[in-house]
Image 1 (cartoon, helix red, strand yellow):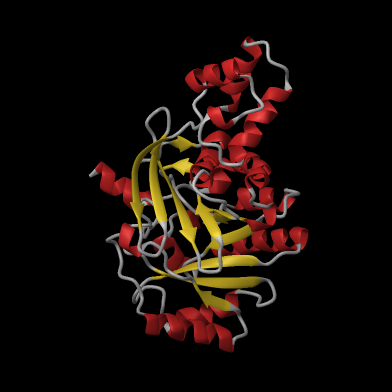
Image 2 (cartoon, rainbow, N blue to C red):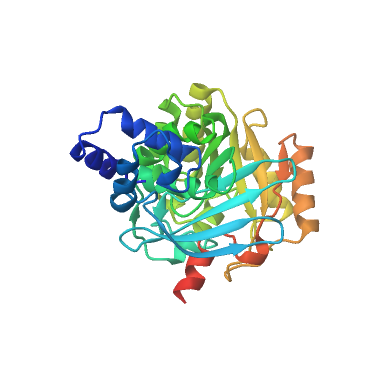
Length: 327
């Protein structure tokens, strides 16, 4: 919802200041139309229905997986494509992966979004509207900023959205922000008082390989990134989650696992090994190779889990649905 537009319309209508809070309370609880907002005057509900859409986004396409995952492609009001994913788990968790930018300027070679033209940063309202789209379907309890874009390059709007996520039922402790290692953004998160989790997209245990996969490593090499993560840990007293996508024959060899184990303090990091959802650039590692990699980390006392693959049958990897729609 465009909150600035809402306040303008309420002001023009001569409504008291508390009306905006009333509307937001209904929206955050998943209201699908103004007609549900029974504590607002009927005439005001009719005016808002015409002048203030409940979402800043329009749905362009939606894909549903056999495992319950739902991926939605939206357009912003100015026609920018963005994606969000609802992931349903058997234990009852409902997690939403949201985008922070339309496209991404950082061109990681394994990421479909990296092949798109960068559009712009998303506003806090546009970020929230991704989560609200799924909140209208069912309650949600986790949000991860792992969709399109680099969240810490849009950190003001990302944190503004995080401040309001608890209204939707998502506490800050159940919110995670992923970064490719944008050091100024990591430092900003370290200073943030909200207890938000930090996830580092690492994907390689040395600078040479990481620069091949992620151009951002030339600007912020591993030593600088890990130093920033240590500052986050010292300030927030929380572990950093390390995301490591498993690329067949590229970063999944035993020597890579040993290098990664030597790089990370077992007390401060937990590794998530991610089976690759192919985008055409690489092949994903076999389950056997992934397990061997995990076992080597375990031998070195580095905690590691293999992430459950979600939505493989619907092109749920970041940027895939947008790329298909643009083709």
